[in-house]
Amino acid sequence: MKKITIVLLMSVLLNQACDSVQDEALRFFLRGNGHLQEYKYEDAIRFYNEALKKDSTFAKVYVNRGVAYERMKQYQAAITDYTKALQLDANLTDAYYNRSNIWFELKKYDNALADINKTLETYQDSSQVYVSRGTILHKLGKVDEALKDFEKAQALKNTNVDAYINRGVIYYERKEWEKAIADFQEAIRLNPQQQDFALNNLGLIMAERGNFSEALSYLDKAISANPYQAYYLSNRAYVYIQLGKLAEAAEDLKKSLSYDAQNATAYKNQGILAMKQNNLLTAITAFEQASQLDSTQKVYAYLTELYSKNNNKEAACKAYQKALVLQEPLTIQPNCK
Image (tube, rainbow, N blue to C red; front, side, top):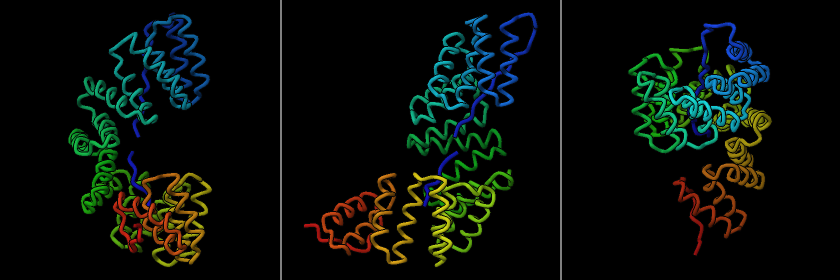
């Protein structure tokens, strides 16, 4: 099943008061801001370009043009603008925050951490910045430090939903089920309209505990709120398999892969379904696809069994070794001598 994932960083949009409407650069800047707030990013960039033609040292223009580029997923252009803004004005803390967001998206977590630490020098009382740093620390494997940041975020603002979600993720990974359940339920209580992720996570916990009927109830609610989320569908498919509802599982997996063809969890669950249907070659193909997409998917115990049944000793032994590394529960031990 899908590893819970964690919540991503956010961007900051700067605003400038208009003291002198005669200042042409400022007028272009404000017009650009209007388009940016209306999600008209190309128009916003056009006006920011005009502002910079009038005043190439207008640092805040670079920040907001960077936001426009970031939202268009033109990450290198956004990084260039945020960096230029900081060269012109090192006190533009929001540029550090936004650039940290992009480093996170690009999986350059050390860079993201450096920028978020600079942000915290100014925003020491910001609950959301602590959530952002905790998110980065979690990705870097510094789980205890991440947990402290999520707890600090809650201390600063006890209604911060992201802090509960992300702390719940850590508890989930540690199999501290009751603590994880409490955090996800609190997130739902605080914001019941937008918590499909928390509902999905609760479904995962119930499935881990073998409470498949309850897991299905949570996953049904998550999918009702977000019907095109590929991982929710593949998670529900797993639960359907455990409940013996194989046709429903097959339908969910078909939908899941149509929404995200790179969903390794869906391929893993497709393999489990094929095993239930005694389609062993189909199962092998699905598990192999899952492992190619994500080498940490726990499919190697299944492959060990399937290769052994197919008398493919070499492949069985390779899968067995990988299963041992991932600490997968094994039902057979091939003779690999």
